[in-house]
Image 1 (tube, rainbow, N blue to C red):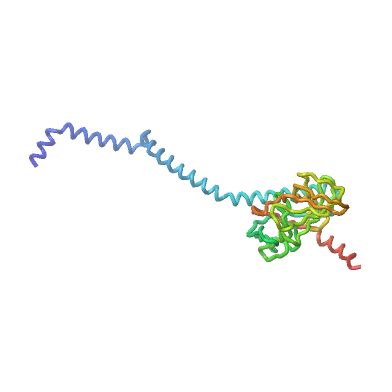
Image 2 (image 1 turned 180 degrees about the vertical axis):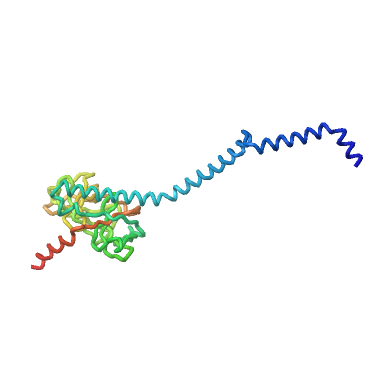
Length: 271
């Protein structure tokens, strides 16, 4: 004990300095000084970076939700467009203005079979019925052939029984579009009168002469025409405007006046 007191007495100035320095540092870091703010700012920068990365990741996974919102916005745009067309153009009142667009997501699809189909996540509970047309944001897709409460089955244009009433946009000439089972990117325009000359890039659209599709829905663009030696109807190849291999979202078309139109047609078909 005597030795300890002797040591403290000999170095009492050094010990006092260390004690006072410790007290000063304690007061410094316990105060809201600039030094303490540096510590907190360093932690906040790190935390903010973590949140930023997390937000980027969350934003990526939120793309699906944003895409669905965009799909619904496009639906409202299409419906608004056709509603305005009905008001401004009396020739559309009983026809193409009366279509409602129902958005849906593709669940499964095929492109490499002779007969291809598409399954979507909307069904009878969403107002979808058989024989409704289906389009994408780029163009024609197919026709609904089966419906359950929450799903619908679509006969794609890539099917041997698909035959779409169409017209050549530049001259309104009526033609038909089929798929011959080769490449999913290409279709065939048939029933082209021999005097009609098509050029690469000419657009083929729906005719509107059905209860399933409105007119002017893009089907594809011409890539080449087969020449006919006689006066028989000719053919032409088109590139489909819809890429069926990357199809994610579609719109099902509801013809609001289809029932009335069909009833009127049936009256005369029965005679």
